[in-house]
Length: 59
Image 1: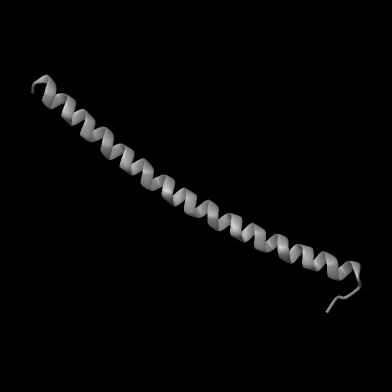
Image 2: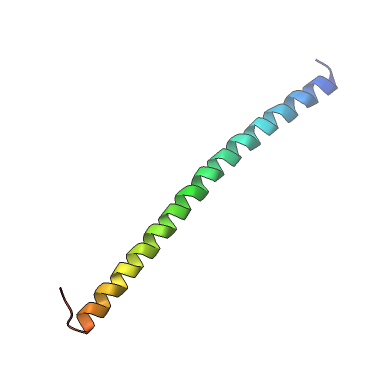
């Protein structure tokens, strides 16, 4: 195998690894977005409960 063929093989493997890592990062980003939305929702509910208990408006 000459140098050019070897370099091409290394570059192809590198590109494949970059694609794999990019896919993983995409999944992580999606998970973090989901967690953020969940936390915002829970924060909203906690504030509503806190406001209701301060005003003695427990249903």
